[in-house]
Length: 238
Image (cartoon, rainbow, N blue to C red):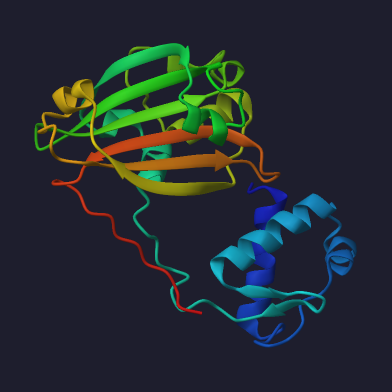
């Protein structure tokens, strides 16, 4: 069964689509939703955040939340680089595991995990191949305690996605990803692993996975040679 906030999102979406909450109307207050659906305030806040981020509603300071209607592209699933590595089994993507273990966390990853700089985190890094050639270097970072009791420490490819594996083993529930994209030149080791010239830049995608309360759980770091990849996104225009 989906978590309560997701059930509330679906219920409110159905009301918007049916015209119960028409475009331009004021959405019931948090207190009213808590009373009607018999849920906690964090559940309501999480559901409203999802609806706002997806474009179903908008907030107006001092006035409340207003219905925008069904987003024109609500059914479109954009190609998120980090998401695939969390949901797809490792066995589905040819490649090799190049590093597993507790290592000092780079500053950017530590900040995304809200950990002190240089503290240790668990790293699982795979070199993914496409058409029998190195394609991308994928690193999954997570707090040491979250890796304990999981198969992430194994040298074998996971037969299920990391999201599902952590849910079944640790009870974690992913809610959303904060994605950042930057570019930089590769290190000598990265260029060698990816079989790319040192003069070609890398596209670097950081996906910080959080639970419904905003607590960081996992960071996915994807290194993509810029001459082999392009990033495409689809989103509604408000």
